[in-house]
Image (cartoon, rainbow, N blue to C red; front, side, top):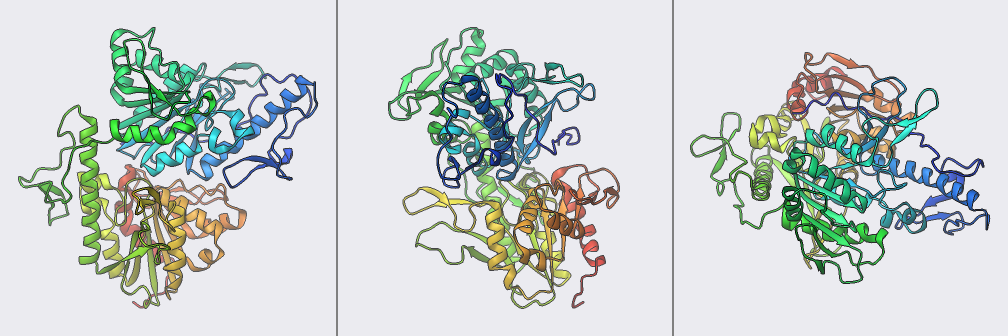
Length: 617
């Protein structure tokens, strides 16, 4: 497990330089100050009368109009930064992670919270050159068309739906002001190439993901080529590269790098041909190019998005091999003494069945993961006596996709205590804290079965949520959102409204791992009924941050929440006291993120007992 302590995060927005402004006019610093907001239906930037932004507010005054546009651009940048945090659950990380001198200028990049824990897939997004910042493909499209067409938000969300961890780079933010007010280069981000190399060395390298896919727009392709030429480690880690309207040229690369890039790269070029139509075959000095389906350079990334994800699925991240659909088919079973996954010779599962074949090994691992999911579902029913409930409880149309959650049979009759279990983000499904631990260590350390059983011993009713199962196939075979589970937050809210609210229990305690803490905070902020019903919250290695919550919700969460953080200190040792923007944190007794929940289990139950829960015991 990579060291998680050195990454730093920005609690407040950066102030961007007014680069290139030719006017000394004073402009608003927020979208609201401009009288503008993004519409909920596709994200068009409109004024209060529903009209689009007008560039020529003062016809003929180029300096004023351009300076006003740049001021608006800075507001758009901060808005998109906030969307990546609030809507996508990302973290804003400082670059460089350790400034040499206090007051040195910094920039930032964004990554999902599973960067250091997602062992499967990582996606890196790199925009083109110019004024665009993190989260943007084309600022002009964001302002004049929509967030959907110009921002990276749809890419981030679709990547998360496909169980990727995501890093969003910020290669064009290269200068800032030092303490004397002098404009100086930002260490580690002096150029777009330097920023990308720094991000790779300090963030991408630390990811345990076996598949690393890159999407680069325009000049982003040049950046990728430069790093591929320079770094053998880059070439070892990266699986597939998708470019959008980049030149595709490999001139300047040595023969080995040209061969490597030709094999792994496809460029979706601006073209009026149908999307995916072959335009140019790969050669020694050129990558393969296909049509993006649009002839406008700035629109190629958004237009090619679905095609790019399909390409990654078919060519890089998945294998067309046929795999078993049961543990027995894999020749594996969980041992009765602690639940280790072993073959018939008592040996543990080996990931690299075909050394060097990332696509095959990853696809085989994911197939095994599906078998593990179904096995744990069966254990919750057979060993724990739980019921498997369909979500949504009433599908609107026959054939609509559904998911499930699990609850004990006394959900509607236990008047004393209810426990709700919420896992983190990624591939984990109901009954799992960490799938990698279940496969590589044991059911005891990675599954929720021990929590369920101990809760039952303490006379709790239990609900096990399934927040990461968000998409399914409709009757036509199209992949569509599951009603009531479109996002982890939506699933949890649905489960609360349709299951938790119906429980007569006087005490409702929640255990949430990692991103589960963010979900809890979001629901606490949204629902007064949630705050009325919930008694205590135990988090395991969540950020503990309450930023984004209003003051009343911060106060409520601070009072009701404890976070068991990854730490080598003795379990329960105080790490951080509660404050307005942070819940109280204590040590989980282990420094490995994935192991915090199982390690803290007894401490959590003791905490719930000590905080005055009245029971039937």
